[in-house]
Image (tube, rainbow, N blue to C red):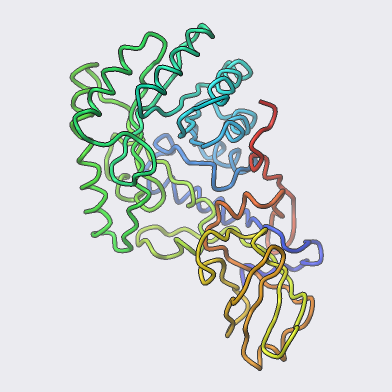
Length: 369
C-alpha cells in the first residue's frame, strides 16, 4: 500500500504525514490544468508550510494567496514575491500589513476590499505610511461569506475605490467555493451562471482604464471550469494535498491524496470497541462525526465517538479480535486544511520511509509581525 511506512516506529501518534512525491505530482497536475504556472495563484492555507511553497516556486509558480498575516510572512520568508492576502484587513491587521511591507520591500502585497469603510481605513493608513495600498475588489457572486453583492452598487464601489488617492486598484477577486457539483457539466453551468453576474463590473473597468482587469477566480472545485477562461488567474488550495472530502468527487481533477494522519490503537475497552489516539485535537472536527476521517487500513468499523485525545470505533468481532494495542492505522482526513493547522510539524515520507520533518510554520497567528 502506498501509504504504509517501513519505519513507523519513528513517528509519534497522532502525527501528520506528507508524502513528498504525491505533493510534487499534485503541483504538476495543477500546472497542467492551468496550462501555465504563471496562471496559478495557489492558496497556502491548506498546507501552511515553507517547504511546499518552495516546491511550488521551483515548478514556476510565482504568485500566491493566503488568509493571514502569518501566512503572508511565511510566504515572503520562503521567497514569494507576489502575495495576495485574500482577506479584508480590519483592526490591528491593517498596520501589520504595512509593517509586513516594510520588512519585505521587494515583495508586492495586496489585500481585499468589499466596502467603502474598509477602503477608507486602508487609504488613511496608506497616507500615514506614505505608500499606496494594493487592493482587489472582493465580489460575492453567491457564496455569501465575504465580498460585495453583484448589484449596481458594485459598480459604485469600484468607482469609489478608484478615486481614493492612496489605494491602488489591482483587480477583482471572485471566489465560488460553494459550487461543488460532482459532475463537470452541472458544475460548469453553476460556475458560469455565478461568474456571469460579475461581467458588468469587468466591462466597466475596461471602459474606465482601457485594459482588462486582473481577475482571480474560483478555488479547487471550480478549477477546471475557470481554467477554460484564458484571461483568468486560478487559485486552488486543497489540490496540493487533496482530502477525503473532495476525493474523487470532481471529475477531471486527477489529484492524489498526499497527507494523512498516523494513529495507533490505544485501548480495547470492551468487546467490539477499539479506541485510537485520534481525537479532535488532531483532525478537523467541524463536520458530522461520520465525516471526520477514513481509515485506509481498517475495514468493518464505525466511528461512534470522538473526544480531545480519543477516537472510539465500533468494529466487527473478527476485527476486534485481530486488532492489537499499538497497531498503526492511517487516517485520511475529510478536511485537510484545518487538520494541518492542528499539527506543529509533518513527517515527510519518501519511498515509504520518514525522510524529513517540516514545520507547519503558519499555523500560528503571528510569526514576528
